[in-house]
Image (cartoon, rainbow, N blue to C red):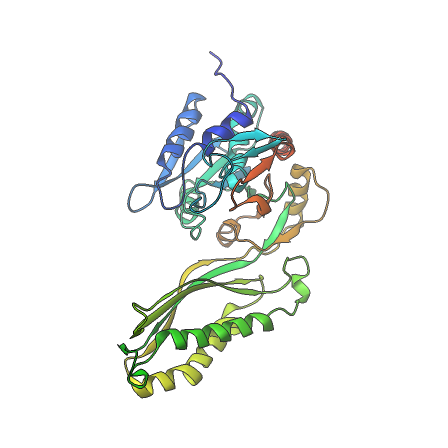
Length: 390
């Protein structure tokens, strides 16, 4: 009995309908994909997080041979809180050849197209396998992909190529910046605000550190030779969250700010950012603070570290990627982070190539253009042809 087929658009609509915001569970989506695969006789494996409320999924189609490809995607999306959407975020709307909905661009369309094309993969005489890898918590630090890569290794899979389907407008990407998310906690000494000489104002000293990071970020804006394809073409520092104090008339005990550094592969965050920051804090901040209270302190910790993606050692890999994408232009670079660097660190030849534009991601009224979905379908046909020729 032949299974009824679903179109790419129908499956995009289905995957978007699951609210998989990173703070919530993704299990309903994973269960749907698992049952969908099972209806075609495809088994899947899951790797759960410690709480058991999230899971990554791995499934293979084709012969149990070496080689083949991994198509990798994350299932989580960023929040819609506070965003002014003209449509319901977790329902798709097709208007003017654009499909609106949270995750349409970043990045549920890529796995949805594969699932829609699954009957084509099963009908083909594949000589190498295709593996679908779905992760959780990419948006909060690429957390779920590590156990997923461990599962790939445990199962003895040896893919020739890993393709991360992040939105690149179906262009091949072989480089992206690494992302380090950090938290700096400044601890001072509380006192009545009328007696400023008896307290250590954590917010004041945090502001001096922030001023230093701002100045350092400007120093980093000199383009590097190896960064010409990045936009912007230099290493960056960004401060995104700050919190401190308890009341206007209390000298604040603590101020905490979260920040990040995006570093081009080949550059070193220690020498560029962390060492200068440590030197500044120990020479210009702590001595003054500790003159008043020896308990004063400044601590910077790394919350998330996502490695960058460097060009593959094999030019053949990029040539294959360009052939599959249908885009003959040279492989390029992106500034946003992906799971690609972690696959590369694990020893897999990895590129990034997927439908949609990152410029539409993380925004209200996120969308993907219909022609991008069509290009991704053509990409899948080329993947089938490639796996039949290996």
